[in-house]
Amino acid sequence: MPELPEVEFTRKNLARWMLHARVASVKTNDTRIVRPEKPRAFVRALTGRTVDRIERRGKWMKVTLDDGRYLFAHLGMSGWFEHVGSGEAPLRFERVSFEVEKRGTRSRVVYVDSRRWGRMILAGEDIATWRALGPDPLDDGVDLERLAQKLTRRKRSSIKEALMDQTILAGVGNIQAIEALWKAGIDPCSTASAISTSDLEEIASGLRWTIQRTLEDLEKSGLVTENLFCIYGRQGEPCPRCGHTLERVVLGGRATTFCPGCQQRRE
Image (cartoon, rainbow, N blue to C red):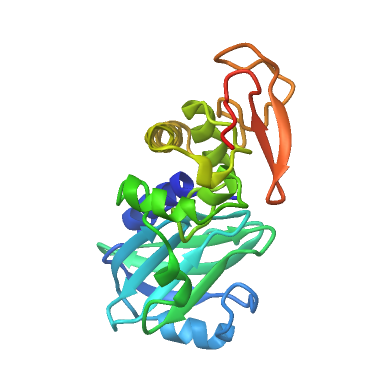
């Protein structure tokens, strides 16, 4: 699933392609992705509009249109956007196509999604999901005091599951949580309420490190399928820090790689 860095990378691309552009036409027949709007209503509402602003919070993006309405977008598990020429043939798994005109040139911005778990929601105000999102670690930083207060109430949750709660920190997903906790030296199975202030400082530092590292990789290579992470998905391999064999556990239904040698359990 695209997480904060991938969505930020996508936002920057959309800003280059669509910001201050006029939406000349829209094509979609996908009732699932644009729900609750019907495809025809979705097309009608967006055609002729100008994109005034493109924001991101966590894994969600918010496109402000010149009529005051918003288009909220979530990439789901497998969504992304492509930029192609105006006359090019439809792409495989193309779900929504925006033909845009910017500085006199037309092109297509295409939403591609093989599994169709992404969303595009038209609204006249902020949707409830957007309003419920917690602070964004990249844009807002990590408020250690506020985070500590939230974690003290999570007595039955692991620290890894708590970090992935989008109302606590928006945008942290499975990969970023795994990498940040490894960098911090904290076992992902640790009880969230047992995490100390010094632990939180290390976790916040780990989040900054892994988000920035991922963004730099994306800027260099784009969205690639190669695993460029330190321990994510590398169970059975030696830990790059201490050499112990990396192990795998399931937390909150998600496979979680960790090192039993250098990540300490807090209980």
